[in-house]
Image 1 (tube, rainbow, N blue to C red):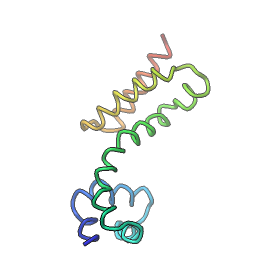
Image 2 (image 1 turned 90 degrees about the horizontal axis):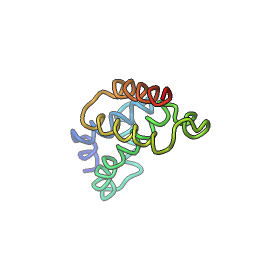
Image 3 (image 1 turned 45 degrees about the vertical axis):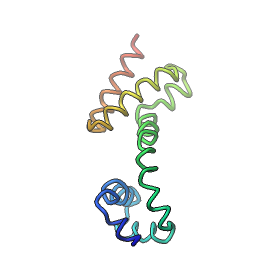
Length: 117
């Protein structure tokens, strides 16, 4: 029964494929890992939790890719509010279907415009 859940279309597309690719292992190996670590109730409840974590994960990835670690956190050239405003708008665009690389390119332009003010 657990395997049936893991091999469902949504689980494959949203969880198994991307995480297996990220870990550079086969889908089957990642399914086995999940089977060993999660029980039925965890599997049934987990998918919604993973979906709700998506905006936070995207925001953290954008934080790193836009170099806010330096520009905001270290050099303080960009305020936390400005960084959050840019990240929030980009996360919304990505969730609405915009390609991550295109959104990142737009974000870099927004950061540069902000720095040139």
